[in-house]
Length: 402
Image: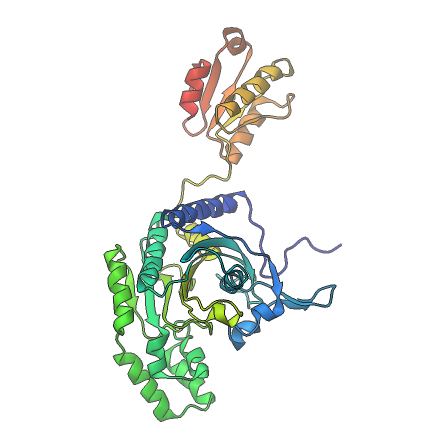
């Protein structure tokens, strides 16, 4: 018999992890929708020709591509941006600017390590159909507002522009190496450039230009507009490349000081991608939040110590088989009043076992209906955190639990 385990790079999410993930998703949705973004979903599989030729050689090595039973070349989606571009090409009559958000899994055959998985969830926002730099700035504002809403305080939004990088080098191979400066030392990157045939003089010139680079007029306007929108965590970084080929203008990534987990958001302007899919010539800008990394940071820094793996607000115990009906009726009444509750399923179980069950699940309250309570039509409520108990009538019980 095979050992019970997941595939490498794929994970199970147990109840506490799911509680964190669901709170992150609901928080992000709330911020996204406050800026007018609407939700979109796209299929897990796309035609191979849709995916290929959009990301660059390095990214394509990580794609899950295969032939289906109809001998069609298909692939698991690598990100949510190319599928969005396909949607815009396929549905050209969508109202523009089209502001959408999307929260779905993507798949990459990564070398797995901390913060890198083969199935990962992205939470994207994109604005399609306007070249206005206000859209770039608004994207930065959404990043900032979202992270602050999640409880992040120590983060930096690094910004750069592909147009600035074009004044430094027009070599894709050089850019691929510069993109590693957040993971490798300057000397290691210089050595890598040497192995690619870049001369010492060219390397010196490239790094001199990086050191003296300043935001161009467009990028400075984006920064100024974002600051007007309340963003304070911006830093110009001329070494920021963003590895994907489709970016054309502003690019940005967000990093946290601790833990060392890589970028937690990344994106930029991509004005030619939709046209490359035989769609209309629509400018676009957007960013992606890495749900998995966001959750990893929240767990590692214990940002949400109050998170509970259970949705139950109360456990209604069963004192005895004879009183089981009382517990069942109360459970129904509480649910009708909008209170999440469980009724213990085994009427023969001792009360101690039921209380232990509630404690292990993190259920904050327990209701006990013994013979005395049943005769007086009251309910004994126990606070599982403090141990305090009190007898209440139904209306008082509901009010207390809420």
